[in-house]
Each structure stands twice: as C-alpha cells, then as structure tokens.
Image (cartoon, rainbow, N blue to C red):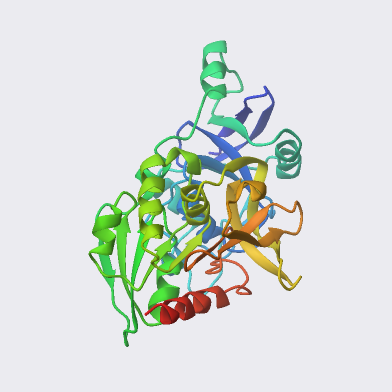
Length: 359
C-alpha cells in the first residue's frame, strides 16, 4: 500500500507526495537538475553528497537500473524527488527497477508532487534545506535543526579509501588522479587515451604524488564547499610550484584556483543538468555541457598568470581557467559528460598534448 510522504522546506512550505525507495526520514540541501536523461549517472554522482535532488524531467526510471552506467559504487545523495517514476522499465540493458535500487541503497524518495512548483521555489529563494518525513507536522526544534543543516566532510566521505591503479592496453603517460569524489568516467577517458592511472585519496600529500613521478595530475570533481578543504589546497599549491601538468574538473577546478589565491562563491541555485551553455572566451564558441556544482570561482579574484577561458552563457560566471605561469588548466563543467553531451571531450586530448609538451 502506498504511503504518503512530505517534503518540508526550511521556509515552512510543505509538499505532499507518495513515498518510494527506502522508507526513512532524511535531511539535506534541496537542489534540482534539468537533465532529461542520465538519471542513473545523477543518482551515482558523488557531487550530490548531502543533497536531496529534484529531477525536473517528469518521468524517471523508464529504462530501469543499469550498473554499467554508474558513476560511483553507491549513491551519495540524501533523497530523490520525481514527478512520476516508471514501475515497468523497458530497455535491453535493464537489470533492475529504480524503486528497488533506492531501497537497497538506503535512499528515500517522493513522487507525485509538483516538481515544477518546487523548482521555481528553489530558483526564486535559492538552495534551501529540506526534510523528507511521513507526517506534515514539524516542531520548532526540528525546524531549527533543519535550518541549521550544513553539508560537512563531503570530500572525506566520497574519496577513495586507498590507491587504485588502472592500466591501458598501450601506455603513454603516467597520470595521478586526485579523487575528491570522482566520477568513474573521468578515469575511463584517461585510460582510453593511454594513461596508466593511479587514483589516490584526496588527502594524499604533494610529496607522495611527486614520488610517483607522474607525467600529469588530474583533479577530479567532488561535493561540498571548496573552501572547506584547507589542507588539500595547501598540497595543491606545493604541486603547482613543481610545474607538474594539471587538469582540473569541477571541484578540482575550484581547488586549483583557491591554491593560487583566488576566491570561490556559492551560487544562488547552482548549475545542474546536461544542457548548460559554456562560452569559450577566445573563440566565442558556445558548447553545451553537463554540469553539477553549487559554487563558482570568482573571476575578478584570479591572480596574475590566470585567465578566464570559459564563462557560463546564462549568468557569465567563470567556467574555466587557463594558467600562463604553469602547465595547467581547469573547467567547471564535465568534459567526460556521462550522462550528457560529448561536445568538450577534446579537453582530455588537450591534457594529453600538455603532458607531451612537458616530457
């Protein structure tokens, strides 16, 4: 029998829906993604750690659960909200149903509420804390706890616990991937291009990385407030002083900028989806990109030797940085783009060229 579930927002608004997935209460940061496909990649993207995700596309689950498409070993998000979930998926690769997957993963969900109205609230008020529960009532103490909720230990909770090595069929480069909550496809793209890849925990020191004699260092995506990672930023500064070729994506992009003295800011409601326009400053060309972030590098805070390379086509925020004083560049969007457009996959080739030039 279906059970009613309620989404309580920190501003006091209450949405009624029907429960699916794991039956448990949860508190998180409410965000939305506009992606029309790739819900499995969304569910398993570590960058959603601590968040309750709204899918703006109305029907979710129609191609079931496909483990080969997962971007991590298990979901990191706190809750999942959809307008309608498909109970009879149809796809030749399907290995399970969305509801079962959420139950097994301990992720509560709500369906049947007005996701359009909910998304408009987030757009107007910005990111809000929320709670999924099974009664519409909330006490003053519970509301206070909801309001004060903050995502903490995000990178520590999503990084790999031990180093892992992946070898290509034909090795050309030795690359170290600093895992801040990395999507699997970043590693796949590197290995496919001939990189012997060593994935290391986020708090690996610069000395330990340099001892691996890397041709290049990849800085992954990940969750949380970038400025929380003080020790990681300090280690990145040490690495940049050694002029090791670097490529940063998403959180890696932000951490690299912070290591050079730049600043980051929290966006009103972030950029999440597979249809975000990123304009290349040098050419004026606009690429459609996959994005998932709530923070951005402040363009005006970039130091000498750092230039904005991409800007967001909607709000003109920084989407990429080229460094002229060291062999490094970074982007805010996802060139590995699973799921999403492959328009900017050429940036991995640019990283390969950067390493060749510095060998």
